[in-house]
Image (tube, rainbow, N blue to C red; front, side, top):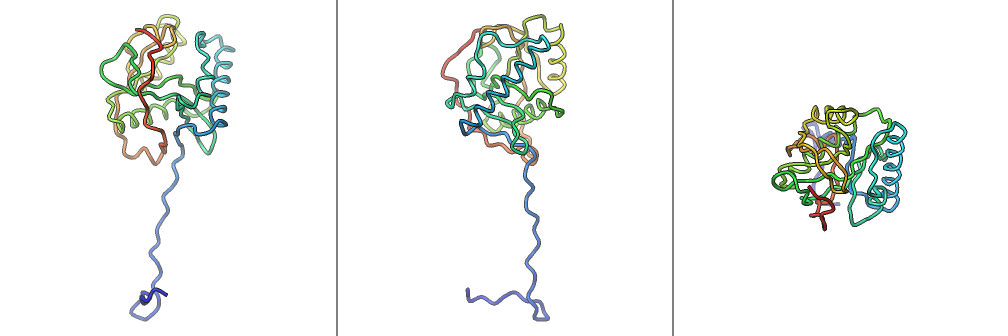
Length: 216
């Protein structure tokens, strides 16, 4: 017994405890991949995406073993999950010395999404990245999209139109980090206070990349 009388009404009956609604869990979760199994799942998603692209005669990176990058714990890859299902994976880095763009940034490396998924996964990644960059005090998000041909030609033109509709700005093209021609993309960082009800974030604060793997 705690020695305190129970709360009562004026009729002497105990009062019911106040009713509270537990907070709803977010629909999606972006988190650093914590286990070998999660990193292997991300590597498999990358392989599936690359096969999907190759079957449609779309560009696939030729220089880098991208699946292997997701098996490397020190890279701190992250994944977007829905009810435990991996929808996308990427490697977030802080200001990796891209050779283009002004000021520091959150760089999204090796972004891959689940093929043939009905939801617009890239829009979710965009919302998260903009908010996460702002939370880290970074003014912008940058990314690179493989573009072996003119940016005005499909299929890269169609992808870029979708990304600009989401708020990305095209900063021209050039040599990417893996030595291939890419489209350069930039997104303004923006605090989104209500986003946590949609996407829970459990991503490690990104570190500055240990090396500069590409040139401008």
